[in-house]
Image (cartoon, rainbow, N blue to C red; front, side):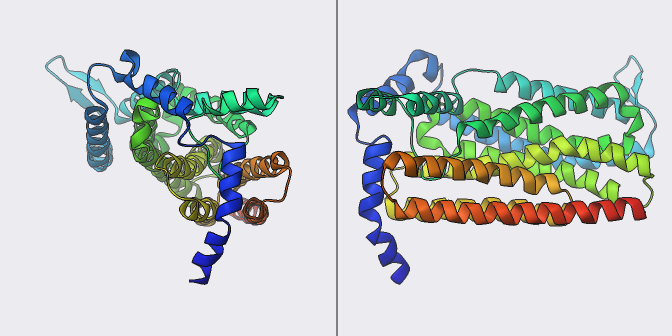
Length: 379
């Protein structure tokens, strides 16, 4: 009861913050902009949004059902047969070649869907940069009217620079798998099904994180969670090989390099999932009494996922990626406090929590680095 009353006591200053610093959901300009986007021929396409939601959800369900079967198939065929014959032409290929082809195809699909314009994230980042650089109140108000939503839990634009590291490292990893995959047969066969699933789920996210799905933001949030879970599963398979006593020292170094981009990608998608959760709350017109706890919960979720996955896998890059995400959110929170021109209690408290969580994640990462180095050289 006391918690509820304390949240209610903060309703007025937070409501004032939303009115001054962000768009108001009743803004006629915003409604007209969104309506025009949703009902335009380019956005609607040939089928309704509800039908698109159903098709994308069904696609995700099919992928989720088929992945365990693919894992079983690869495991069984790689043990029972050296070659797999396709059709009447007697084309024989090894399971390793099949997995390498699937790996490259999945990454190519991801690159293609990510390159498609029109997603919310690209629009939001650009508008946020324009708003931060705006001088006059009229210019700020005009930019705010074009923004799709506003939340208490959002990162500074520089946070998205991590995508350059993720995709460049994954490009190198995919090139290695495609052309030199025979050097890491076990890793490729075990990780490929989950890598495939993760890239498909992220591709589905790319297709639905758009204005026409504004009223169904739970769907892209679900795809991000599934993509992150899948990549964490691929990461786990590599981690198990690293900890295996069968792997020589240089083999472990190679596996560590292969695991690096997966750690960044999986952890960043986990952070992006809670960002999408806050966006969903915002467009759903959730009250301040709901959005404030969700913002705090989002920080805690990012910390718990990053911390636990680092402890269980021994990979410090997961915690470091989560720390990067929370640092960007804290940077944005501090910027909001500065722009407000007066103390906003909730924002100050949120920034302090984010600072503590970042420090804890860094401590976990340092601890795991020390443990990993000891384990690597003692084996």
